[in-house]
Length: 404
Image 1 (cartoon, rainbow, N blue to C red):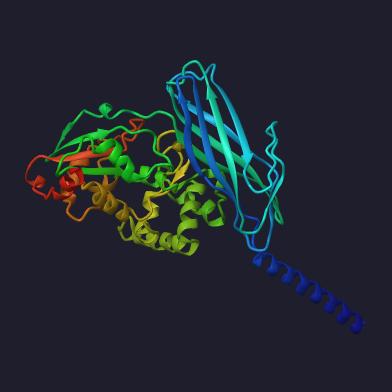
Image 2: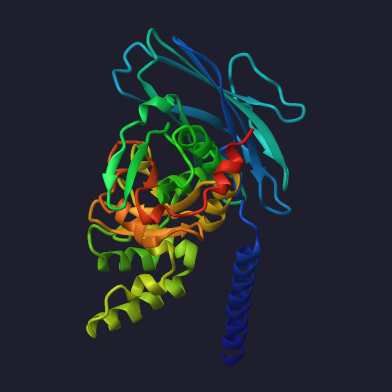
């Protein structure tokens, strides 16, 4: 009997060992991660009754040693407009451009195997037709695809936002008085990952600028231009996020499981939990804001759903990456001093980065009334013109840039 028990024990032990080995090798295996990037887009046709958007995309298999299949790739388009969409028709077409791909006239997508590490090109064509397209503002393109491999059938989505309306420079002419300065909110097209901050300043700000002016850009538009936004459907809240989110004020962007999980993905669960524990203890002794000091800069900067203008009101927008490098580029290439700021209607002004020659007091006084607004003004850039002693700065940089 004892021998039988020993044999059964050995068998059970062996089974447990095999299961543990299988589990260990499973977690060490690369996942079947297939990425479809946002690509580069252009308005190939921009006529009164017909727009054609063309995107150059890539399917990228980021795993090692594993092939991943893409059995389905398609595009859906939502149009944002100042008027009705009645009578407007949309046609979409996803065309494979990888080696030996068959381009079918019926638009059918044939299942494709993406080799390990490969980047296989795809061309997306969106045709928009109608009697009057002048009211269209934005095309929100949802690229739906499936990653199929060792982890099964995994639907994925990539969001691309392309502007369709571009305001003229003349639309921004209303200067407003502020403390020690005049401010000019500057209207732009809806900024997307296709834009560059310096190019935006050159296009919309420089026609109004003069030596000594300061350009400020909101932190969310900068993050959007860097592609730092994601749809909540792409975020999978874990145990910590689903429990801890209830501990934040309802108005906080960390009060949703997806918003908090985004912070955890950036900073790690240990740091976020540790910051929460220490912050809670500090509150008992009357110190507020300790969590945000310890949890990392992004804890204050993440904007959850509804935090920005459409269609970004459907996304979680992170704070910008390396904002100081951006203001340095703006000053170097335009001659304008610059700052990246986070301003709201509660008279809170946070300066994330600024040129070294700027007065923080001047910036806060000029922006305290939030001239850019937090609604649908679509004026993410504000030009500040100092009016007194604050304006005694060198204008050599701008003069040299403006010289032919």
